[in-house]
Length: 112
Length: 174
Length: 143
Image 1: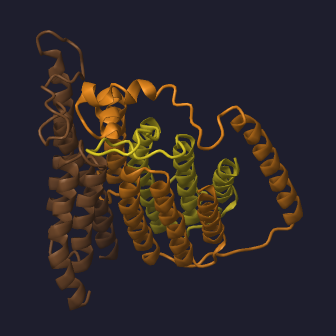
Image 2: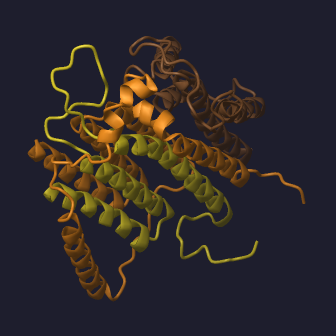
């Protein structure tokens, strides 16, 4: 149970980074930490004590597998997290070229 | 076993807090690497080798792109102290406390850590090898039982690449 | 970069590329699959570009080539999945219609190896396109 609570504490730290920071790169880091914590939580739910990886091999000692369904979902989610983070960083460097700063309180013009 | 997991999660939390409070942006990115590589160790301990493979390479590529972005722009961050810090801290602690309390009640309805019920996965594991014909059950689930989800994920990746190409175009039509 | 980095990269990037192809092709037997192998192949190319600098490539042509490769890979994915509609006997989209073979051999498991190859090429080309777009932007801003 403490493992679940610590995982959600990581999520709350990422949320603090998104909400309370002024620097654009810190916001991107906070969002990426939130994504990591959610992937970790899904794998934590599917763990079985004494289980092995869900791959059939020639000589198996025990036949207790961990849950393969969350692993299949998180596998694609990790690669999509990379694509999302790189999209955010592309927007960030575009904003830096125009305003010469990463501070979100200076980025106020809606046109141009 | 869960002692090892707890220690590594505490290390990840420490790295995350340092990465958000660092004054230099380069130190923040290096501390963000602690979170990513700690996650690799967690995946290996939770018996998920495919995920550990993907997470190592994805973390390395993310660190490369972030450092390239930071070294071509500024490296410092301006911090000022606002006047109502005590109010912000108290409200943040109250919010976090409520969140954790309700989350504890929700996960009380799940089974405890390590005794997963596996109600749905029994229908995937038992006929899994004969129906799909693959020895790797995760690949069988991705491409045969849950093929539509993989199609959607590939489309999302494609859309993200189109988004990056659109944002970074410098010469457009005037 | 110094000459040690360049020599080591020349030796290692071929090995990393071969390792990525191994993980993609054996996706139905060992842990890995299309997504893991695709990112490793992209990592080999990114390592090469970082170690040698971007003066050696004509970046616009590389980026066009890799984005064409990515689009055609996802098109092949859709075509293989839609070919299940034409097989006589089952008119279902995305059904496994190739023969299954014995578990544990390289040529088995229906069309899962073909899907692994298509997804591997798509992920590798996508990550390479993102990296080349950032590099082109940096070159144009510096100029």
